[in-house]
Amino acid sequence: MTALHGTLTTDPHDTWYALLAVAVIIGAHLAFGRRTVLSVGAGTAVYIVLLNTCA
Image (cartoon, rainbow, N blue to C red; front, top):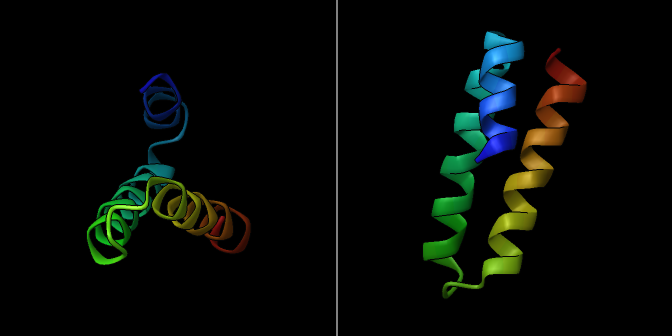
């Protein structure tokens, strides 16, 4: 939670990336049989790709 709070306060532009990554985590968690490592990995990958390509 601290990392998300830091993202929201330092650069509001990245808020949408963080929210999209959270949505991917939730979707992957529900779609792939509640495999936590897979869903968190997918969300992290989406967030990093968005930060590096769109920022």
